[in-house]
Image 1: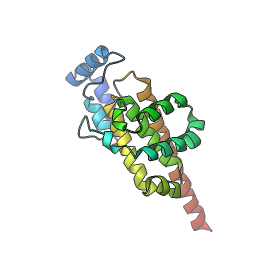
Image 2: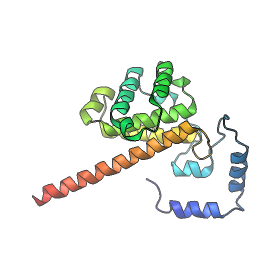
Image 3: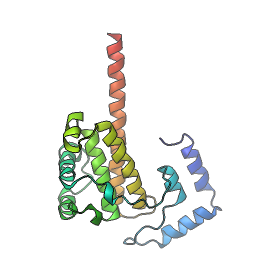
Image 4: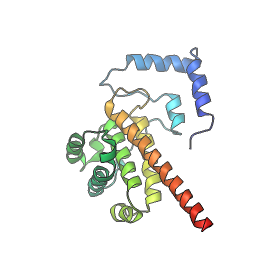
Amino acid sequence: MLPSNLWSTLSDEILDASSDDERDLSIRIANQSLDSEPSTPPKIELELFDLDTPRPDLSSLHPEPLQIFRLWQTFLDNVHPLTKIIHAPSIQQEISRASGSPQSFSKPMQALMFSIYSCSITSMSDEDCMEILGEDRTLAHLRFAGIAKKALTVAGLLTTKDTMVLQAFVLFLVRGLAVGVQDRKSVVRERVWIKC
């Protein structure tokens, strides 16, 4: 949950150009090339995603290879037709190449994959989630959404020029919108049921 004063805090930090952190961030952004790895995430990025450590190791948190393929197929069936944010054949090739050892995913690809897992879980039924991952959909959703946040930070969301990281972030936001719509629908259903 984001703090309620996030936007005013963010606004204050942006407007305070004399801040050393802001100057350091501006210099890092100006000096970062398209193909370079992001340096340590800025403080605001860590606060935005409520993270303690700037570089957690996420490679061991991927699902098993068969689960990766099933989540990918769920994404292609349920999410991709609505978003068309990624070029599916290219991503499929990367998944096929590296799914046996997800440690070999680049940081941007890792962020995209965790966003894909999160979107897939959001779009599936409780029964499908239990069948594919062997765990409750709500718990799986919370787990993979949290890992997706960390992966976006590790990939340098606020300082990157990498399109794949931006695609991962858009999918992460789409997942959040879908969760909000699902929550509202269940509240409306409860109200209708109570009135009957």
